[in-house]
Image (cartoon, rainbow, N blue to C red):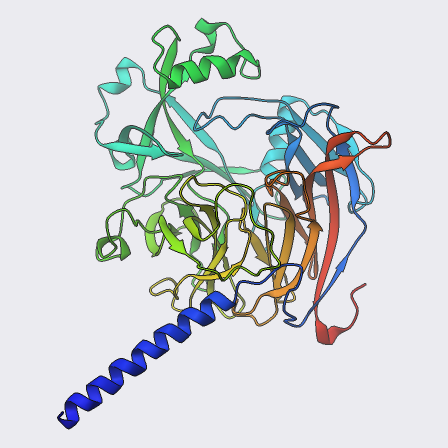
Amino acid sequence: MSKPMRSLTRCTILMTVWMLLAALLSQAQIVDPYAPPDVGVQVNLGEPRLLMLGSEGRLDWGSFQSPWIWQHRDGRLIVRVTSSQDISYNPQVDWPRYYFVSADGGATWSYIAPGKEEERRWEMEAGDRLADGTQVYFGKRRIVLADALRQRVLIGGEAVRKGTKFPGILAKDLPEDLGWIPFYTRKPTDAQWTQHRAYPPPGLRLPIIKIVDHEKAGVQTSDESYRDLFERLEQGDPSVPFLEQIELGTTVGSLDVLSDGSWISVVNYVDHDLPTLAGGYANSTPAGERPLAAVLRSTDQGEHWTVWREVPFGDQVIDVGDSVPASVPQPQQDGRRRHWVYRAHMNVMPDGSWVVMTRCCRDPKRWTDHAVLFLTRSTDQGLTWTRLEPIRPYSLNPSGAVLANGIGVRKYGRPGHYLTFCADGRGERWGNDVVLIGREREHDQDTCNNNNFVVTGPDRLIIAYSDFGYKDAAGVARKAIFTREIVAQPMSLGSPK
């Protein structure tokens, strides 16, 4: 064998060994949240505060869960709890909401039933807050596709919303007076909000969906009979009166501001039919493996948005082999080896790295419990990304934040609610996980992890979460909503207060 050939063979062997080692290292990094690595974060858990109990006997999915917490500019904390059904793509249902207010940092809570106008003002306070204190809130517009409008727009192609296909229309094909999303800003010194118009990416394909015509059907949006009408409409029942509408909104998620002043936001393809970049990942991935998400960018403070970057490796099935720790209980249905990656949650770390964690489902039936959490990073503002790395055995809704002290935090779960932390400023090493609600439950999805937290200080946050297995004073199982303060500091700073 010639010397060049021997060298080539050695290189091939070394490359193969490196790839095998990389795969083994990647698999070895799935850790049990009950036995997390120490990454130099000291975490202090405050006492859980019981906020509310659901009605006796109402343990069904959707009732008394999905708490959302935010802080008003005046310092008050608000928690909203929904009693809703998970009705596919429908945007119209207005199920009851329950509001709780705290004026003492979450120590005590009071139930309040706001009027419609006050409720709207509260919801606006739940928007983003930039580093300079400016509040930003993106609203929605719904355009009924009446006959007069059909003559002004070009309908073509398909759009997908939550797995359902609809006729579509490109955002650029809507007349300028119609194709905008309302958004509002309020600076710390402003008493009133200022309204603006945000224009989504021109290549965004919007679905034209059918909605129940409430007036002709004679029902309220919160009426339980609405669910039956909507399901019949989904199944093509011609007797259900309907309207067609285009929804403009929810395109922009949580905001990050880059050093050049531009705004960026991650949008998932599972929720929006977005255009792909010329020469982007979508052009080189196999059929059926679309990019996970797009990073939208605005250089004019939210008025015009473009698809700027893509997050790769999305909408594909990954086999994690036997890398889930033996200490993690098996799911009750099917195995957990193959996982369907389909939703991104991103934060910009202190060193400028973009860190994405992904929600997954177990394949082939897309069970959402016991689905592995993956991580990918970019150090060049989304031009290239690391391979997806499995890091935890559960993955539902791993949204997060970076505290002012530099600590990164992400939540994840199902079954159970957990938080994980990072002190390296880069998003590479995550650990010191804490368990809010454990996984020792009657069934796998009774801790939904449809929860939320709000940052309340440079080293702390308050999380609102649900417990489906809480027992009241009489020993009766009832859904419960809790809040809890978490303080996270670099280990060198000593014990958190």
